[in-house]
Image (cartoon, rainbow, N blue to C red; front, side, top):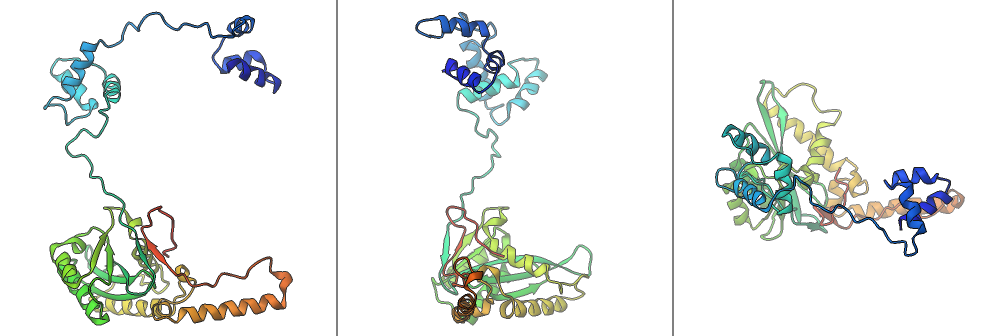
Length: 338
């Protein structure tokens, strides 16, 4: 194979000497191979083991020490200096790592090993009031170091804000009361809603979980510190805080913050043409008006193409409704949540 590669390189214009250097093969060895009838590699390799190879007894000693009760929770980088302080040299860090790797013991060694969190379960919504997402974000107050807290619940399928509250505290009691109020106002039945959130205390507290169980609401949670698991709420908060009307100064009072959020929600639900649902408003989609709007847009485009067909290379713009929305898809495909 090496001779064939050398010949191919030479035919391509490479010098044989340079090609041999690249393969770390001497030119004289190549000539001997060519002169051989069987073209076999005559190299035999080293005839003796390296003089510094660990003996089996030394390997067993390393494994015994690093797995002992006093050292098993530490990495080799910590074990080596600890042993040196005791006047003992066992082996270098790299040697210990190599032995552990060969023995399949390179898993996290400390008792504080990071928890493994599986990807959240995929949830699919094909209509309103099937899948909600909620979160809490900070709103600046006039008192330095203090904030107001915006609790906000949205329908993932329609993107409509179905409820919100602004408080001076962040607690599971407040979040539980809010979810119960929203479900009652909207007439949500048991086992109708999946409610997705992150892993904060107000979301996973005992009071909140008990409330969800009483309401028949299925709880879904993101992995810790993974904002991509709750993209729709994150995108909504980004839209809120990047509005031109978002105050440049902190809110003086809780009532001021609540009043501003009320105005934002009214605009967002009734005027904002949302890119993730083909540029209809959340209210229009939530209440079943979007299909007619999109059908009329499609008619406008078809008429425009019929008048000037030479200006259209293919189909008109896709004004079809977004039928299904998926939260945390299994294959991690990116959905437009903005």
